[in-house]
Image (cartoon, rainbow, N blue to C red; front, top):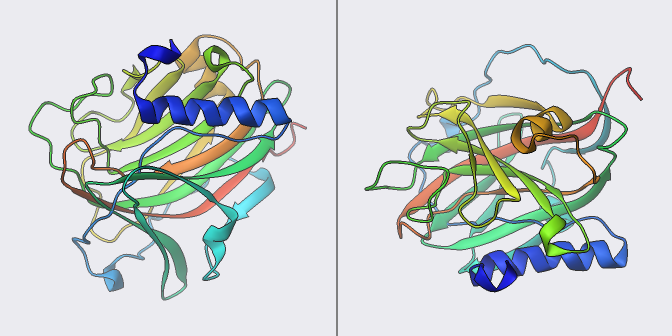
Amino acid sequence: MGGLLPKKIKSLLLIFIFIGAIGAVGGILFKYHIFVFRYAASKAVKEMPVLEKYRIEIVKWFTFSEENALKEWEEKVFKGRVVYMIEKDKDVSYVHAKSDKTASALYYKIKLDAKNNIPIVKWRWMVTIFPNKELPESLETKNEDDFAARVYVIFPAKFITNCKVIEYVWTETLPAGTTGISPYSKNIRLMALRSGPGKEGMWYLEERDIAQDYIQLFGEKPRMDVGAVAFMTDADTTKTSAASLYTDIKLGYKEGVR
């Protein structure tokens, strides 16, 4: 399979192999880009009123409240570098991701037990610019494989054929709940969580039971632990621009289960 994969996909999967081999946890698969904001930053920090579904025992919480907060994350450049900047408006700090025909990724290595526990990932995001696509949007084609916002949960392994990835995406036209198999590898499964533009300047909260999503997407319980998380905004295949904001990434276990 490795010989058939595009160069940047193989590079990411090699990260998985390397991480598994040295006993650390990490690796990822995705792209990044530079973008121009459609909305003023002053409008970009409204709260979306919502009750949280899960109470969790937090293992790691990224508030992006410090200027050097992204130093904890590692970057993989594929085609030009996406601009990732920490910004703050009122009481909200966030990562401002900008893509202009570029692709690079940020990932963070962390170990979460997905075989015996219920790992949860939470985050808030906002799309401000969708990549301009001429073809019908799809989760399963290489043509125009760009999305305004992606969040990844990676299950690294020593061998390339055993690595698994859950990819959550915010699409422009596909209905929320749509799932698919990546055109690059059957080990990468996608799930659309949001569709279309949100309310201007409004944050949206996502809460995902990683093990349950794994079962839905792969048809079996996880056999490996979570090894890394990542997020990405890309527009390299469409050669356009895309823009999104990310904040409050929380990783942990469902409270009362461990």
